[in-house]
Length: 286
Length: 253
Ligand SMILES: Nc1ncnc2c1ncn2[C@@H]1O[C@H](COP(=O)(O)OP(=O)(O)O)[C@@H](O)[C@H]1O
Ligand SMILES: [Mg+2]
View 1 (spheres, each protein chain N blue to C red):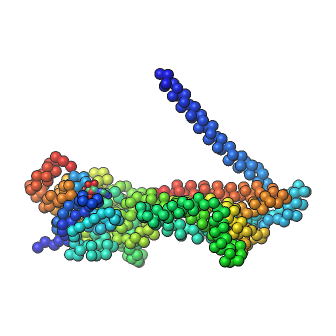
View 2 (view 1 turned 135 degrees about the horizontal axis):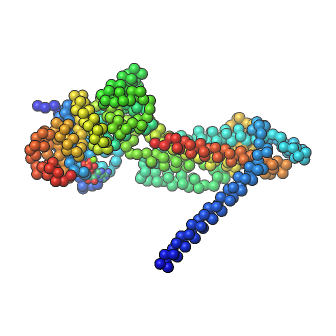
View 3 (view 1 turned 90 degrees about the vertical axis):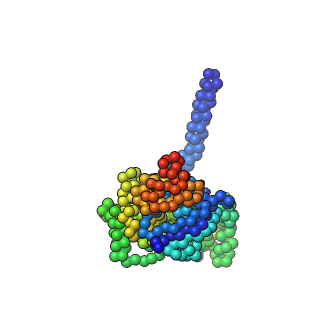
């Protein structure tokens, strides 16, 4: 009887601990979001999206007169969009094929090696992908560029996309393959017309989540895209990005108010990507 | 001389070395009839059936010896894609393609083989195939809906229609009604009897009643061996082998 009540007590204790700890984990998150929201929302208006970063002087004048800092982060938004787009275009086909290969050849040695390499790539510090992209792209092109930035982001996207594609395909029932092969389908047609479409929701979700993971990357972009104060549509030229702007704002005391609004923008972007991914995952479930 | 469409010659299939799941089966299947393969669970019925359209090639560990002739040609010397188009297959669980509409499911065999059809040809194939499996009236207003919204029995008829769309010579069916309720089962049995004028049917079943109702010839398998193969009526009234008799009288299975 005694040991029984002790067991109940232990149970209660553990439950309480779990609840306290989970609340504690949420504290930093709430603090970050709260801080970013409170300090960031004021700067956000139409010109925040349509205008480029203000000069230090303009910002200083505005701050001294207790006005909002003029200008916005349009150069960063366009740069981020362009680089994420190019990175996705590079990483998706390769990641998709690789994921299909891994899922179709689960036990072979070569697949094991590739799987191991993707794991390493996934754990590689992002600054290193930046250095790689610098050597591969910046050096031969003799210029910092959006392309170089995209390559570094693509390297980071790859393992995430490979993984999610493989995992989604592994979940497909064997009966789908049997059904297509029994109709005389070739292997290629089966992959293209049956497996990938059936896994489409999961694959798309994986891509969106991967994008949301790299969209705020800063370090690799410093070594590759460099930054620009104007909107730059030429992917061969140095380009800005929202994350790069946050770094620039941080380094310029006159612009520090902009840190929070740019961060808020990135946070909302990531949130939207995640919510969309969730919606898609739900809708496309088979 | 009867018309033989499918010839098994000393067929052995093994999943693990030294242990035959199908052991030395030889038999001739007659064209235009329904042949059932009966036997207790695990006796190698599915394994034998899947050897016909080379489904085992999906799994590299499986070894097959002996030969199978389809319409006089050794299936191992044919292109597997041709074999599978000549011998369509319907599985135990209905497996319509979840991303395709009913319409697209019927045409999947053509799409997957890269065969282009005109709109009129497509409509014609879809209508006639659905009509043949008695599904046309039930689904003609929802052709663009996904196949997976149909009931189990309807899905299985859809799968039969999908297999028939390629006009196979043989239809291989692996316990096609075991996942269905009695009414859906009865519908499919009626359907098979009607279909046999167009296509030879080999059906695996562990339902003796079903074999008795629809098949012209029956095979009885036990522990990987083909124990007895005869006219269904003869086998049910006067089995030659003790094991067949034991099975038919319900003493195992
Ligand atoms: N994928 C497999 N791997 C290993 N053994 C298998 C596999 N599938 C079937 N077997 C074995 O082969 C034998 C025949 O199986 P199967 O042909 O499925 O029987 P049935 O269809 O008559 O129930 C069984 O003993 C089963 O254990
Ligand atoms: Mg079976």
